Image 1 (spheres, rainbow, N blue to C red):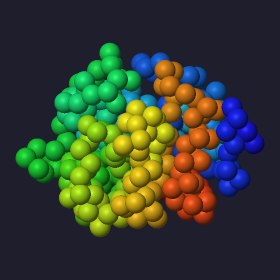
Image 2 (image 1 turned 90 degrees about the vertical axis):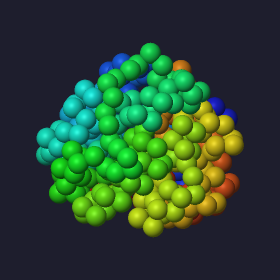
Image 3 (image 1 turned 45 degrees about the horizontal axis):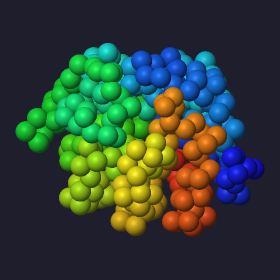
Length: 281
């Protein structure tokens, strides 16, 4: 299969993507849910997770059907640390709980950074998560709900240090599935100390196409394979913004680079089983 003269690797089928944006949204998107999932299917993905900074995609994913999943982003529109939102999302078939993104203090502090340019003009109320290096107690019930339903807990736009604190408590409370979103984006402060904590916790790191486009070669997420266990890498493309390439353009060259870096067997595992196992019940 060839896309714009760039050939998909032979193993690039039945893949999974944990991070896809679609309309309706307060940010410009390439297409609605059905069109976006269709574009993902055409690029080799059979399992797709819809994400929306504005709230829940659970009902939207159910309407699309197939191996399309949703979740809830705990930004201010859903009340931040709201365990009821998690319970409802889970009972309706949601599989992912994202910590605050646009509402996160770290996002607000880094809003002027180039990698957050896609969010300019879109602001939400602040949601606090970490105070004085400790997880705020209102989040305990959220973590308990995530553990109860065996959901994937994703870090959203918390910093690496904040994520290490959160995930340590999440593990203590029985959360089994942990994912660090786009760790190499500069405003999130990836560093050796939190990386060691996250590795010991067995947290997965998300490799993504849009973060690599925005961060450039020096901050490519694919490079994480050199310093973090390759068995703990998963894929979330973060595609969908209308000002950046759609899957038909962006996926094939990125997969070629991943294969070059880690080899075809590991690349295939990252893009299929390693990613899919994080979200399937």
